[in-house]
Image 1 (cartoon, rainbow, N blue to C red):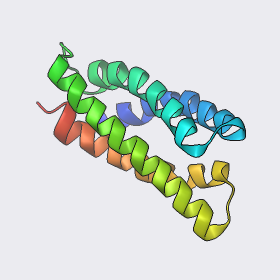
Image 2 (cartoon, rainbow, N blue to C red; image 1 turned 90 degrees about the horizontal axis):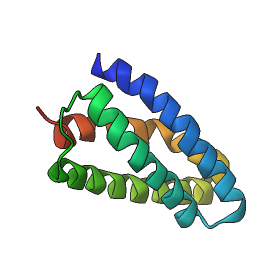
Image 3 (cartoon, helix red, strand yellow; image 1 turned 180 degrees about the horizontal axis):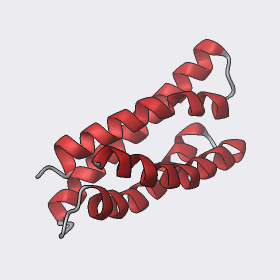
Length: 119
């Protein structure tokens, strides 16, 4: 059930944050575009996943700190993978960003389930 809820809410979060990423990539450097996207993802995701997916009654500072660590790692991973894929394949950054999505989703779910929102 967690994975299903994560996928549904994640799809909504993805649509919002990825739209921001794609628009940002037209005007801004990759690192700043992914930062804007990840920041938005951090705010939306923390509350949606914490309350609605992992059913936390209280979202403490400790949980927020762990979520922030995961978000920073996700931002770095996202940025590096977009750079590497676009460099080695010649894909434009926007297309490279799309290819990175499954990796980020799997990383995000597993790290939240087993590190951030553990029971």
